[in-house]
Length: 96
Image 1 (cartoon, rainbow, N blue to C red):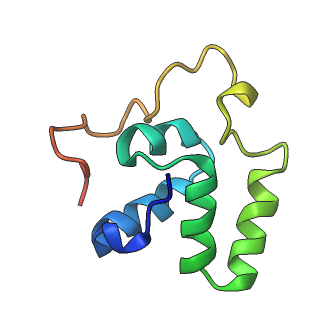
Image 2 (tube, helix red, strand yellow):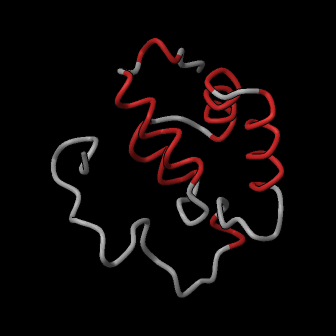
Image 3 (spheres, helix red, strand yellow):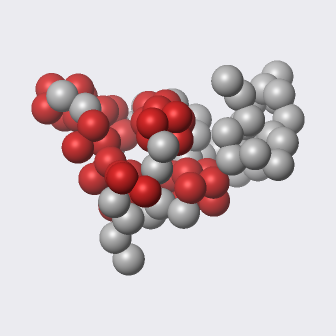
């Protein structure tokens, strides 16, 4: 299933990119909230970032620093969000 970036509002695209840049936000959180697989997130990032920014993001995601994959995370971390973040409302985008 391929999802075009035209299916998202500018605000949703901004949030997807923001979540993808955050080291602690796993791809599974993006899948849960926006129904985008890791491959689809990569396509979104490639089409919305400058080439140098995209390469820097991919390098970071594939490094040991990033926890974008749940398998790399500490098993004690069981949440998608920071404990200080506002609770997610019924909206897709909780902050803004």
